[in-house]
Image 1 (tube, rainbow, N blue to C red):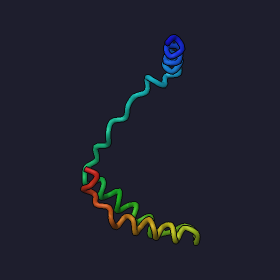
Image 2: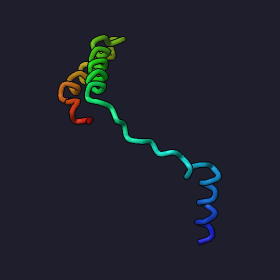
Image 3: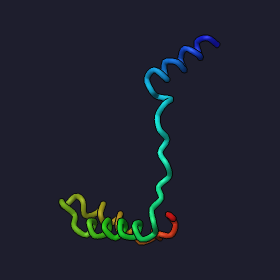
Amino acid sequence: MKSRYISIRRLKALKALNMNRELPFNYTQEEIEENLNMLKSKLKHPTTEADINLYSSLKQNLVGIVSSDFT
């Protein structure tokens, strides 16, 4: 039991237990839609030949995303 107490005290000393918890994101549907459109726009322009397949795959996956699923 004492070793557990010491371990917890060490974590507190390292501030591992004192971390602030992140609040859930609270984006509006409009903001999400803007971000999805910006991502789609960036994926239209692969930077290298090797990126073409990756970008195409990502664009296809974006088609199935509905912004209302995130709000």
